[in-house]
Image (cartoon, rainbow, N blue to C red; front, side):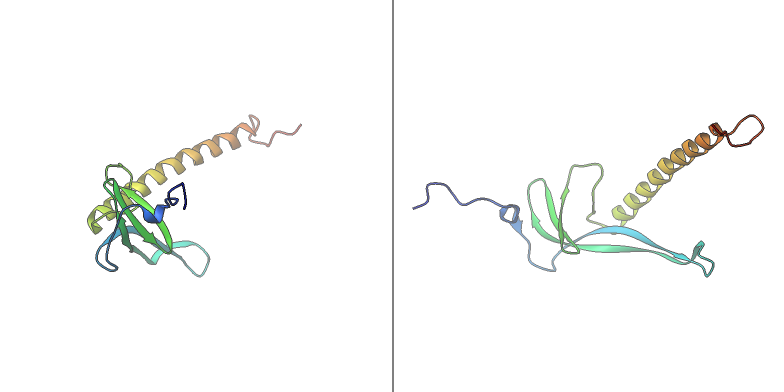
Length: 127
């Protein structure tokens, strides 16, 4: 007779949901390149992933994202996936706007660093 109870795993947590019943959604984009290797909007498109709900808990849901289980907590501001396509699209827009903001700051830092490597005449500083 075992003294200790069976070990609880993540798979044991939450109430199971019947397969194919409900989904959460996450948007993404496929951006194409032209024949010269430059990014182009031609042929680029938005699409969404349907993440099947595996289990529900009082705090959130476990979804299947291409074989990986992800926990989506209901009260979090930033969620991996959303219960409606509209909410998922709004979240995608906010994610990409924040990404652009962060990358602009990184670009500015890199440009300033390049300026610092040149002398007053614009020639690279050598030591």
